Image 1: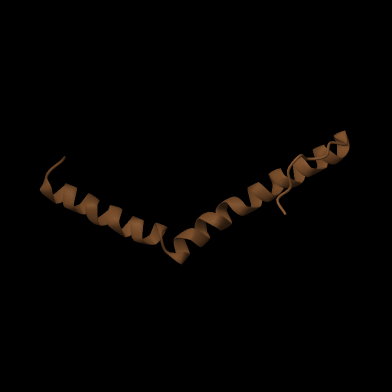
Image 2: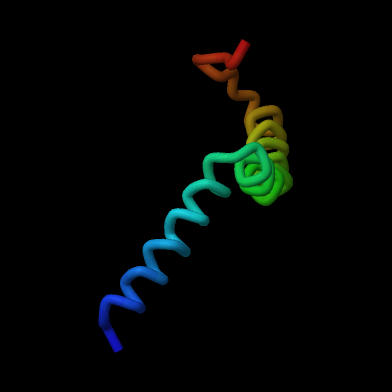
Length: 61
């Protein structure tokens, strides 16, 4: 049910989440949750390039 109480509660929850999201803890949590999958994708791509003898046009360094 939507009323002033539920809208105020939603706003409080949203603001709390926003503070967490922008904090070191929030950033660290997000980074750690995607770090392993991205590392695996990078390794698979690097191995594919080696296997196909493809030299990347751009480097990250």
